[in-house]
Length: 171
Image (spheres, rainbow, N blue to C red):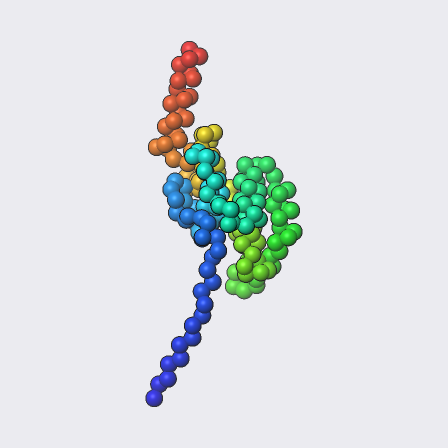
């Protein structure tokens, strides 16, 4: 006689997924960097919409703003300050990595993902659209990392047309 034992393991739901939308075009990043990119784009500057409502913990909004500032080369000071109150530890194994000290600490999880992205070089591929009206955060998948706009069909066309008109005015 064979006895089958079914063990139910509760799934750990990612609390960040309640506030972000993964895979929004343009410029989708590879996982897990996509979580960071999606969070950064909850501050939709093109449409003037703040997608993080009042139910979102202020520290999540704070880490989003600090990450955006860091991405735009304003320095890591805000992130360093956040890191002191959201500790991560080294998880040893086949692939050592940083993990939040507390499994429910969303901010520490994001900081660990940013660290990993900086370590593997993918952080440098996250960019803000060069259209000052847009500033959508996108993943630059071009071979030489020379992308300037979130979408060539939208912002790229607009910015090239602006430059063309400006050159015509000067001539």
